[in-house]
Length: 334
Ligand code: TRP
Image 1: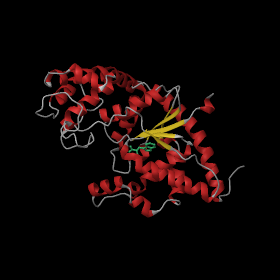
Image 2: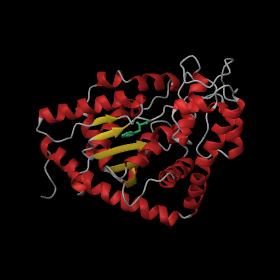
Image 3: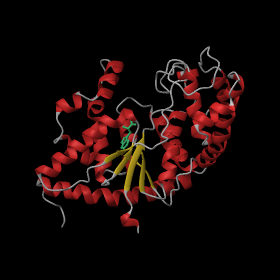
Image 4: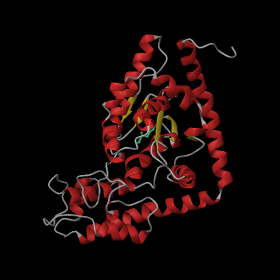
């Protein structure tokens, strides 16, 4: 049975506090995949150090992200949940794949171009190389499908190119993965500037809501969210702020856009905003409580990440050995 399921790999960086964009756009959808697919969900701490991290915060955020995965409903028994740095094959495979990736290809990555502008003189080589590590993550598990947001599509294309190149040069080694963009994988926008994706690095803290924000903060931020002067709850490109609030409400409650339009017809924004806030509070409160409980039980979290690392190590080593053998390295043991 297990063998016939398609394999899914995805990961999130523990590089900051997560927003409802990460939750509604990614994690909430992962929860729905766990019965149909064989899923690997990774806390990608090796990716996080491409920009400087405070060691204590990195440790906290790594465990918190694992706790969020579990609290959101990703069952650690059904899925493989693990921490990337516990599985050395990721770093090793990244080095190998580096030698099959071109400088020019990496230079064309728009995320690198954007980030390197932001970090000016202090651009680590790892930031340039980051997509190769991501390719290693995916290819080591022979993933069929990779749920990613649009901002990661270019990295996934590169992963496919690297896999095809290696397969052609030697012989079939890697599954060439496809992107998996779930139907209702909402892209949540900034509440103050709905032309931008919601991000915790936004200048205005009212632009984003964190998964761990308190009910009062959530209510305040939703009530201050930018709308427009049309005063009608309609899903239209002319009303990006309202559209964004509607997609939050729809993703949380499952209501369709036309249901939402009907419900608020002839009303202003106050009641609508109030309902968006309450729906979010209702969705997030149990998750927050569970995260806090889990973070108090470090021993439990340890059993989860140890079991995850064991499984991930076993699978990734098999692919790594294949790579080494094809490249021409002498095996230490047969
Ligand atoms: N690069 C991704 C991001 O920043 C995170 C990531 C790392 C990832 N490895 C991955 C996503 C493998 C999917 C599959 O969002």
